[in-house]
Image (cartoon, rainbow, N blue to C red; front, top):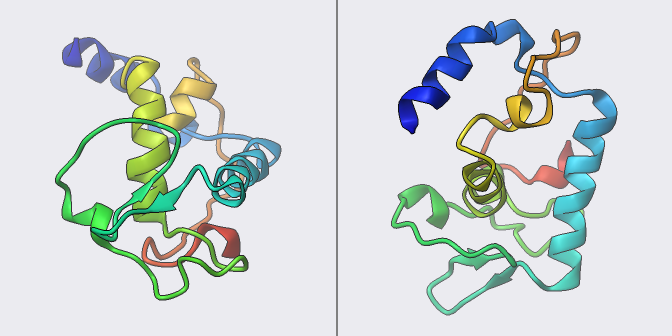
Length: 123
């Protein structure tokens, strides 16, 4: 239930909602692999679709950078969140990506900030 997910997040303090540097780079490479394989396509509505299936009417799914098809920039973080992170974490029970990877938490040592409208491959 949603409440159990909320309780889960309340048990682990936010400073432990982290992944390792290696997991971060593996995450970016997994997105790159999906994108390069063609499993992350743009349909005639301008909506990207990966191999993961779900439906949403969120306006965030329609926010693209002009460089979406640029191999240097890649899909923006709105797309990555809607098309990869949300379906993956939903299947795992609804917790955050970091807590899905580390249910007891992992103390953060580095914080990365990035504009969501920019491409993930720039990270």
